[in-house]
Length: 204
Picture 1: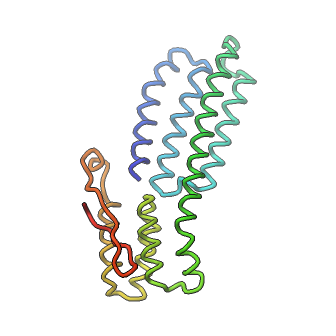
Picture 2 (picture 1 turned 135 degrees about the vertical axis):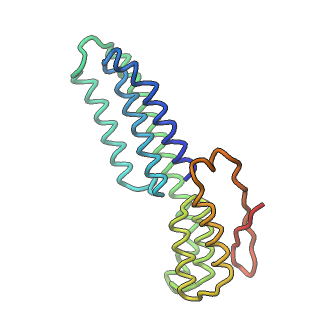
Picture 3 (picture 1 turned 120 degrees about the vertical axis):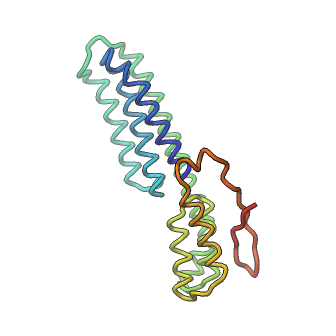
């Protein structure tokens, strides 16, 4: 969530800085940078929606890379560009996005492995409140606040007085509802403690 806000701000700043160069000389050199900053904004929006590992995002990245390489081959805006320089520029951008996607896939695999024990329990008993609670805490730790809230909401449908679920839900709501201004301030850190096999979120 926080990373998504930073990504959007970086993307907007990058476009503002790059646009004057493009307007002054609308050659191909500026286009990959403009598109890259646009992709950073799109990535930030996916992150805010907690869909940064969504397959649709990977498809958008692939389409973006295809476009900037095609532009280099057909040169629609300028015949005078240094193709080698353009390909180096585009190659570096491609490597950057490949590294980013690789990191995201590793993160998704890590989350899936951490959730696997709880998923096995829930496959047998979907209403196991301990597994739901602990799954919700783990999702929170990876900034997947909405999915985390769904776990606590399900517990409260089973038992509306579950003290641990009520506490964790309130904690996640507080963290999720921070505004953009709040992210420039110091956000309280948290810790995870365990009581009777249940994970509990606490402010440090």
